[in-house]
Image (cartoon, rainbow, N blue to C red; front, side):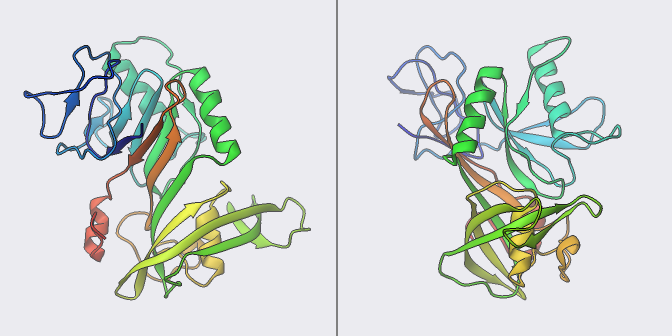
Amino acid sequence: MIFRFLGGMMVLGREDRWTRDRGGDAGSIVSPHNRGFIVPPVGLRSQSAPRTWTTSLMAPPRFDVLLEDNHLLVISKPVGLPTMGVSDDRPTALNLAKEYIREQYNKPGNVYLGIVSRLDAPTSGALLIARTSKAAARLTEQFRRGSVTKQYWALVEGRPPAQETLLRDWVRKDERHRKMHLCNETAPGAQEARLTYRRTARVGDASLVEVELLTGRKHQIRVQLAGQGQPIVGDRKYGAKLPFAEGIALHARRLVFEHPVRREPVEVIAPLPRAWEKYGVSEAS
């Protein structure tokens, strides 16, 4: 059984039998004895919007809760919010998620959350967070094995190929300039970087592409597409000339992984930020 989530909130109970919840939103399903699993069955589209949470301490930033149960949390990270690890007092997705858990479940003190993958600050989209150390270990192992589907949408300059294309490069870190460079396989610190991408639409002077990450290097999509002469719109760090309304035009659109406890596949799709509408890109693109 595949559980699919497309931007709304649906509830799965422990029972295998399903009944329609007449008092809920259109398309929602609950079991007779719901225990709080919040992952929906495949093929059902929720008509409700994601739950939006704003910290009580600071109005912006805020995030949408895409999927949540006792073992994991998936949020839609907004543009400009670092995932974790900043040196100053700026908010991060991790500490705001901890505050959300404390407020939502009235849990004082420290809250354990484990980041199993990161998104760059100017990138939006689905961010998977483990709520237990066991879930963190199992999800991290899935990422290590490459069994997690990580799909992104990006607006890029130029005209990439319409057919799916494999990019295989070697990249290295430039700590001084806080960016990545393409390099030779034999260069010190070289890491293999692989992805597939294809053009799905033309958008003015840019193109909408669908990218699937096969490895998980820092700034990987940004540096590899720039290396093809197709930098992401708004990404001046990697040579883009076209501006973007918020951050860069890179969105973590879709995650597919195995639930760390239930061992069933879960699919999460993060709705596009409103900024994309200014470029004629919508959910139906």
